[in-house]
Image (cartoon, rainbow, N blue to C red; front, side, top):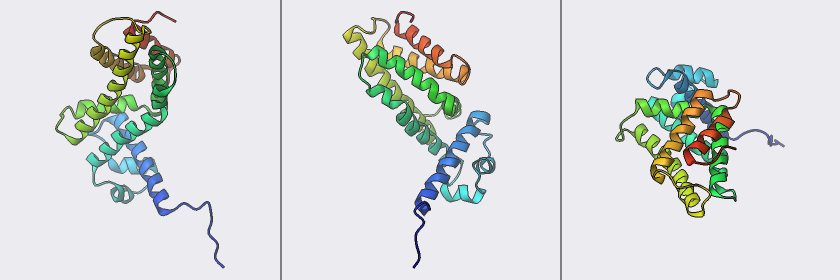
Amino acid sequence: MATTNPTRRTQQERRAASRTALVRAAAQGIARTGYTRLSLEEVARVAGYSRGALYHQFAGKEEVALAVVEWVDRTWDAEVGPALDRTGDPAELLLALAAEHARFCRRHDVARVIQVLRIEFNDPEHPVGRAIAATVAKTEADLLRLIRAGRRDGSIPPGPPATQTAQALGHALEAVSIGVAGAPYDVALAVRAARGILGLPAD
């Protein structure tokens, strides 16, 4: 009687694994060369698949870019998002988020990917531009919520309007992550940048 290998992956699992590998390879390529110069053949090679396998998953470069933005958003939610749900005062939550974001960018170099795509798709009517704007807006909304809560409970001192403070904090964390991701003290510098923008005393 035939037996089933319990470790053998299903077709759906293999497809999901190949898609993730292709998306990660595309993200690395965009961070390195930009979207315009991105070669899908090179993406497939880096991921360990044929070009045909890539086109079996994606219709073209634009669909790949949309998948990269979705992957960044989903992965950030999984790896950094929990910092937003911890107990503690809002100031400490924002500092923890700054540290987790730096570690996240160290692992995935996503800050550079989003920056490159934001520049190349600076058009809110383009599907990729819309996807990036939605991802950035969601993050800024989380920052804004915590900044307002911190100012209400006194853990964050008064300062410039909360909306502009949230935007500045998002851009600062992105800049630090691009400039020194993976370097010594990247986490410490991200936290210092957050402290400065929030008006918190030095640690």
